[in-house]
Length: 288
Ligand code: GLN
Image (cartoon, rainbow, N blue to C red; front, side):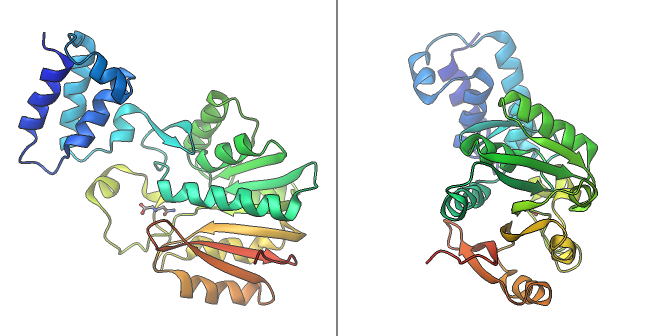
């Protein structure tokens, strides 16, 4: 058998003419062997166990087939928490960590003195947003909804895995909250928002669940659905936080104004400088 070093360098040569990066196969090795970069260098000359070698070779083949690394290793890191993913749920994106960070900051600002804050993650998928929020802010009374039972099951498993108390309710967008008469201080959602005709990366198109990606002809279908019914679930003083597509700002704001013409709102950019979040302040003063 070969050493970790030899196996890795052989792959670098093998993938030279493919679209795959050296970083991707190295990350595959680290995640499959449960190693940090440091561990790898310490054990560079050790023999790679047969079983890991087989798994790794299979992983490289799958990566070459455009399968996302996260489905191969079975998880993604989100806000420092391990979120297990199967092809039934969207892989949590780094941009979405910024949505979480901003919700935490606003919650601190508006509800600092409160003992309990009721919040829901609508269309939770893997549960990443709900889990990160609840782990970071124990005062949250956390609800999470999803229409997909398999997604909800995955989210529940992830909550258990992360030792996190969340109430999961199955149903279409806000419906389960309405049915259970739940009133929110904060509504968070990263709904499917890609217009159906828009081209997406091959690995996304071929492997990720379309139900979690596409938001109708203009991408706004689910925002409309939420805006239409939001008044039934948000409290008198509350805020809503959404992830949005980078080019959807004007269209979403126009839509928002039909339903909440009086509310202040703010569109925030992500670290890449793209419009990525919409915050709507309902009868509360927004931060300066
Ligand atoms: N940001 C995701 C992507 O570009 C889409 C997530 C979503 O539709 N909510 O693949």
